[in-house]
Length: 351
Image (cartoon, rainbow, N blue to C red; front, side):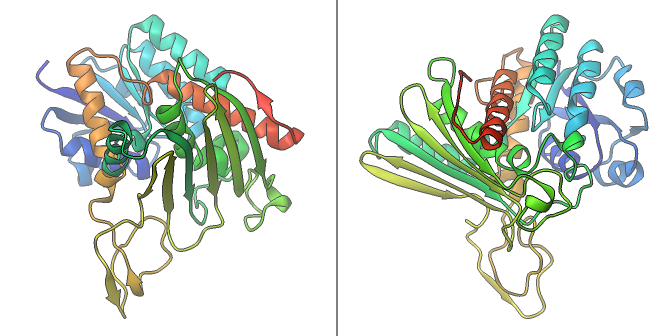
């Protein structure tokens, strides 16, 4: 196989950064996209030759090796199952599914079909976080004891994000899933699973701080305890204004590291008129801003998808952190957090 031929299901935001990342890899050819709308604009922007309104028609093609699942959360299960039965390897955007039961079925069907299921947690490939881990692994901050991480912004305009049935919950599953997945990657795994979670959320609708039309919560915080006693504090919310705010703090016995993924730009710009774009979810760009420099690369998307392509070309299984098992564990932790918030107690298990 000289090139991996890719089909994308979806035409919105996630499909765009998948296409951008694939376009940077000369080992990839995007041959088709399937979506219920936006096909003409998407195919023109990314020079995709074939379009389909029904993804099943695209999956029937023999020349597609890898499918990117870039549709609303509730569709991840159905598209992945269909792609696996069609014999395609799959990159599934977060979350793996809206329920752990659906995630388990996805893993089982992919295994039976002999196809690889990749879980797209981009933080695992973010250059700044990888450099931070190098510093941790060389022992420069002693033993890493505690992780504090957040993803927050001012809410979603997608109607699918506003309903539990299509999102799976609120900001906990939609935003905090990144720091949860990264905590599992850094501290967890088969030899050191998460064993306790405690969480609080606003509860959705009238209980929310701001977004009274969201069925899911607009604020969430959780604590994960691992088998070896280390802990992670996780936050996700829709009440943060001023742009998407992703910050990770790693506390060690001999030092600490802070990584600012979204406001860590080397650019400082002052504009009376405002500039065209600064970072995701900014309301306006007047005055001082810190515009992102290659946002998709710095968030990890580019290296992430290059890694998945390499796994397909060289018949390698993905590492922990971006394999289906991690995607499932992340959903299991989130379900336990929702249970903790609802029942007001710590939930124990093994994830």
